[in-house]
Length: 113
Length: 112
Image 1 (tube, rainbow over the protein chains, first blue to last red):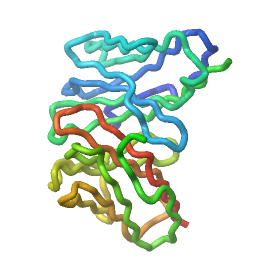
Image 2 (cartoon, one colour):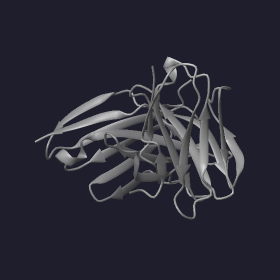
Image 3 (cartoon, one colour):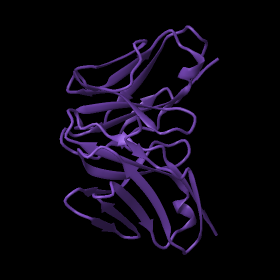
């Protein structure tokens, strides 16, 4: 039972355009959401996060939107750059012991020059 | 360098064997998490330790075990290995109530 889903395994975008990566979750107990970026041969690195008390968080070119009623979050990258090409994982955390994160399956973003 | 060190980076072993993966967390982090990533799949949570004690358990097989030592480094032991255990194994660490993990670069295990 996948509690966090990223339904698009891949996304291709032209440099300078907006990239939108989507993530859906099923567990209503999740109250904190994160996006991680992963390059080949490296571990995931933290990108941006959002608490359930907010619906938007912005950090430079990256903005995360949270729609609690739809149990949906999205990551917007504007403008997209070739260096953004990577696999993006969304993750969620709830009021569970250990602060464990549940990850989605990832979306491979390719930004074409 | 994320500050989380995993060794070895690559490991090739035969079915039925046993291996140990090692993780040194970032300085000051008390929690260590182990995740498995198979064939471009998502990250599957295996187990977490906090300051030497098991804190949470995920989809970890009985053939797998882990521990965290007094110096806070952790080891993941995989035994009676099967072909399907081939995967990337990531370790991450965090301060107790910090929701952000710092990941190591992973150990790629290949079982032949």
